[in-house]
Length: 170
Image (cartoon, rainbow, N blue to C red; front, side, top):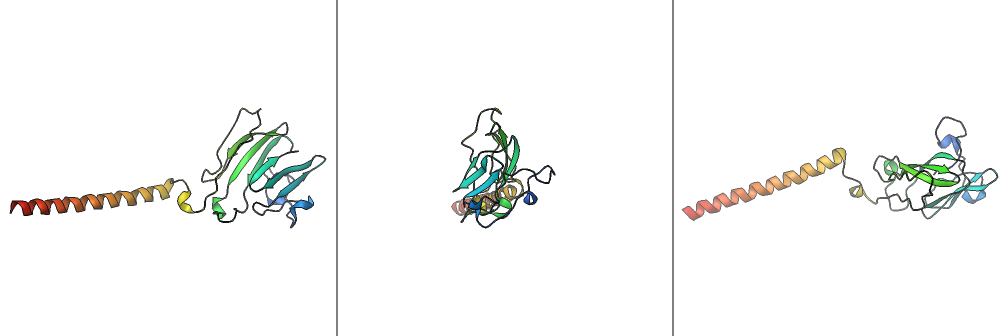
């Protein structure tokens, strides 16, 4: 997860902007473990955001857009290239817009009105690849297999009905 300022001013929040620590409660940096509580300090205001059991709360962040990235999926869920990513826009200390940027669409886009705080944004975690959206080559392959099975079944029914008709005529 990321909620720190762009320290190296390269236009993105990445590992170069984050200090990794073993104990997230020390307030000295970010621990990128899953679902363990994480606190990121913000100068003078306390915590920038905290995570507990998958719930993220933003507080003390300067106005701007931040990248939130799942580094490790919770126990029992797919991780790796299936990790959730989204951008959150903070305005007046409130999360007012979310934009999902992960490949699988697990983080939806909720642009809101740009003023009202969004408090119910939810992302999806999947336990296996069959729960991912069927798009692109994977979707085409699945529908091709289903089509071939249906064509095979139709061919079998046709051949059997021709044999049955031939036996009835004899």
